[in-house]
Length: 145
Image 1 (cartoon, rainbow, N blue to C red):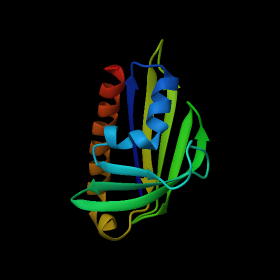
Image 2 (image 1 turned 180 degrees about the vertical axis):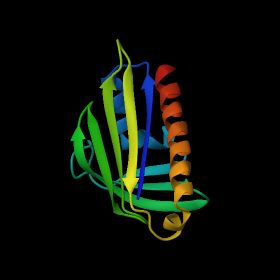
Image 3 (image 1 turned 135 degrees about the vertical axis):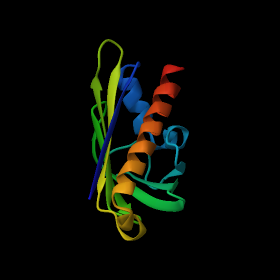
């Protein structure tokens, strides 16, 4: 089981951070390892929405489909793999962190299978490192606008 939590404070209002981060079309811009995101259901994002992602992680190319299982705009988004190499859930939460600032938390939890299961603790460390880069990219992008 992996359960990786990473957080950052972004100097932008919660609604702005959440709207940008929750839009799958923006994922390739701020996620280091995501190459593409393609809607399988019609936008906008809602519970039941499905998006296909292509990513690179630990030298492997991954294709997976995430389904939105919980969405409270500007508060929380949870997506789970509907198709892919390992059962995984990604949760974003957003909270006010002072005037005009947002604390965003990114959590990845799941039960790796196959190649990724063998990696054990290395997998969690690699995920944390990638998530830290992702959140720093998000902060840089949003604060520079």
